[in-house]
Amino acid sequence: MDIFSAMGIVGFGKAAKKRELDPNRFDKTKREELVQPKVEAKSLIPVSGPSTVSIRAQYQSDEDSDDPGPSLPQPGLFKQDTDGVGDEDNEDDDAVSTDDEPEYDPSAPSLSAPDFPITHEATLKEHTKVISALTVDPSGARVLSGSHDYDCKLWDFGGMTTQTRSFKTWEPAGSYYVNDLKYSNDGQQFLVISGTIQAKLFDREGEEKATFVKGDMYIRDMKHTAGHVGELSSCMWHPKDKQYFITSSADSTIRIWDVENKRKQKSVIVVKSKERGARTKVTTCAYSTDGTLIGGACLDGALHMWQASSNFVRPNMTIEGAHTKGTDVGSLVFSVDGRTVLTRGGDDTVKLWDLRAFKRPLASHSGATTLYPGTNATFSPDEKHILTGTGAPSKGGRGKLTLLSRENLSVVKEIDMDTTPVKVVWHSKINQIITGLANGTISVLYSPKTSLNGAKLLLSKGAPKRPTIEDLSDALAAPTILTPHALPMFKDGEGLVKGMKRKREKDRMDPRKSRRPELPVTGPGRGGRVGASATQHVVQNLVRDTTRDEDPREALLKYAKMADEDPQWTSAWRQNQPKPVFANVSEDEEEEEEG
Image (tube, rainbow, N blue to C red; front, side, top):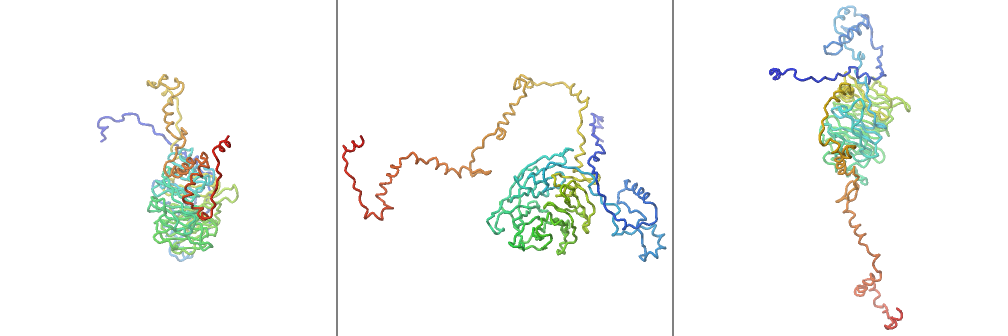
């Protein structure tokens, strides 16, 4: 028994009224145009039986019940062959076939299409140019986006309302494009890969933690440089160890880094091309799910695989011409079992590769228009489907999100978007599809039934409460409490202006708000400014230079005695040098000349 009920204190106080959410609140974000999946009627064999309408009504009532379980197939829809002889001998089996369960035909399409989270849409619009990098933290609570407008933005689903606004915006590398973004496995930090040659590490709130070193561009051998010397293209964290990550670059290398050591990489994978010069740009890189393999796709069309425990002298597996030469491979993704690799090429193709037979693709899908080099593809959470973006056929046209079957990469569904989708992320925890579009919009597709949190939180807070007459009357009826220092006589400005003395004193201590000049740098210098130790001797020599105030005749004559004693420069002709003979001038003649 509860102690309060035992003491007779039951129902004490007034229960807070819970805010009820509108059950139809998700209808505002429902997508209007939905493309229905194509189902060929030829593969279904209708037979005599009850009408389809009555069957659908019967099974809809069964699905609405509380009894869990998969939906049953419609009876009488497929012909059955119980003895395996043929149709001419099936007269005796008709009575049996009505009672037994029909056989499963794997060639027939599924009667109920997969429930993709695409019925509703929320948009995050703050970027002004194409979304070139997009990622979601492991919990699905925050979205991190990068764009060609040089900005990175952090979005928090739990902190946003229907007025979607990012809570942090910054330029990670000045006027350089953002090429890739990746959250660590614990979600406490993330990497920013821009068009520079230095990777940057930020914490969860977007504060910079480290900038990794750049290499020496004058060293030819890439193994002897401490960092990259070409533009970075992509990155990925180690799936098991949060201390390590890899980066790929245009300097034909993939480098493995330790988070704690920003002065030099841990090891270097030098990619050797068969083209002239033996160098090529590594457009994307990835770890396998167990961290034992490192994959890289190159601009020359090759696809390489290295064992993470090897010395990286040469790749363990290589396919030349995996994609068309000169096109950027936008993504390289390993399946969960580590046996299948998915690549999205800039040659308008999506290909699946089996590492056990790494010679030709398992399946290939062509016609996926690629307008941006970073266009990627990803697996669905159950890995039965593949999601990628297809570019608009003409300028200003509408792009498509294409869902492909993993078995043969056939098109299962196409979703019309406002413009070309570039980056796609299908998060497994929240079951939502986050898409970065070419016009700077981030589209979040979800389903109120199958999705969890994420964009649903935007509409789960309800509308802000409007003040009522009762609230206003309570505020007016409340007694006014006056403290001595709240009276006008104690305020600055004789009660006309609110006291800002403490705020002014606080702002005075802030060097930015008070616009205090920068203090002279002491020590070796930082932030691009040279310290006093580097310029001190120059300044001192300039100050001590007093040659203008000195008489040149006296300056020369003070070396006359030294020249007589040690004639270093005139000793060669000292033997035959004529002696100067001066005229004897009396003192009277000197006085006359001076007079």
